[in-house]
Length: 211
Ligand SMILES: C[S@@+](CC[C@H](N)C(=O)[O-])C[C@H]1O[C@@H](n2cnc3c(N)ncnc32)[C@H](O)[C@@H]1O
Image (cartoon, rainbow, N blue to C red; front, side):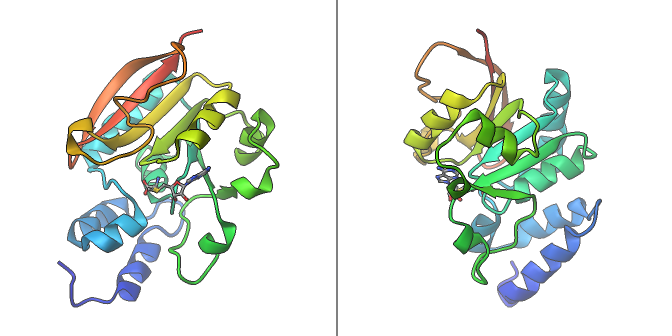
């Protein structure tokens, strides 16, 4: 553990490792293994392994997913890893609430382009498109999201075919909404196409719209 190391130094190293087009994701993952839980969570809720990321990117390729909007992406470090490990074949954009927080000196840096919910009067198809620089996202990603009302609202306006839900296995007793394996969709439109098991008993579920 890096107990004696200050958070500031660790963050500085993480910013260095994620700088530029390529960064050094292998070193970043190795460093992630040594972080204390609080800082780890501040940066992202699931720290995948390189093999988790490889398989995830294979599913993106076989599913033809090229543009993802990650709703509630936090720092976007997971999204940066997905894109970088996958050779930047996929465009990933982020959406968050509370611009003031994410631009404050107390928050960690954003690792992907961030959009803010407060820039929209309401959630709409056009807003989702604007978040992706004018492209319609073909997948929405929710990782450790926990806002059922907002989830249903994003789902209602989303026109793409894929949903990627990342979160804890239901048996862990950690609440997210949606939970990847018990998403409680409002209708029968979505079917589970792929389920990946990630480290620390996390699950990635790919759902496809069938109508
Ligand atoms: C538990 S955090 C997960 C952050 C990140 N996905 C991760 O895995 O590290 C959930 C995030 O959802 C965001 N959030 C909550 N409601 C939202 C909404 N209506 N639209 C976008 N983001 C929202 C919160 O600000 C928070 O950063």
